[in-house]
Length: 247
Image (tube, rainbow, N blue to C red; front, side, top):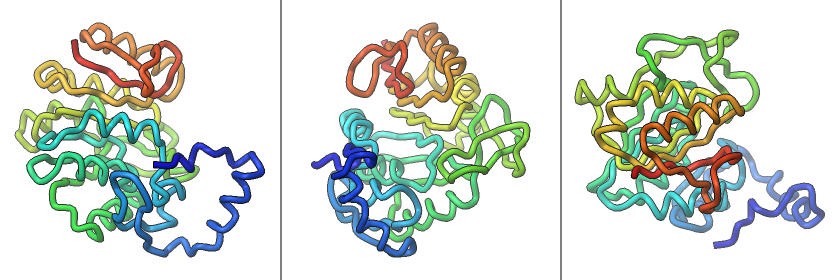
């Protein structure tokens, strides 16, 4: 599998390789070219070209492939338009299940389209932000669709749920693997999943946003007896992409 996304767009070869991609209509549906998702259908303009090229966040893909097994239950928290939902769906197989959490309507539309066009049957989409309390919050959709986040100055109201609440009501199954990328709300999500994490001890893929959130998440997971590493197995002190392993 070639890591095409690893070629910088600041380099000459990177600019040359990317130039033809601008000619592809954003509404075009294409097959993903390589990797575990090879052959799955993808809408070109829904996200970065690395998704349909198959090289999107290459190191993270490979790490998830090592951890998600057939029959696993996976939480994709901050599912965006569904790349990791599709990956988890394939890896978990028919006996597994994926719960995809996404509050932003534009992303939800693309996520559901990707699931529908690929005939995915082992996934449940939950249109909410995951936090430490249930109710409503304000969401800021400014910028691109990958960086929307809960914020006091946002323009969109979204519902919030806790993982503990969903599991206690038996609305979702407990996870084997959690992938979380929610633009700064990671600590609140973890706080609202205390019982789930203590009881099921999932492997947690965590992208933190900002040094304060990073430090607080690292501290909390350490108290919960998790060992932290980077995606490539290195030390976790300064990396914003972590894997937390139960001990």
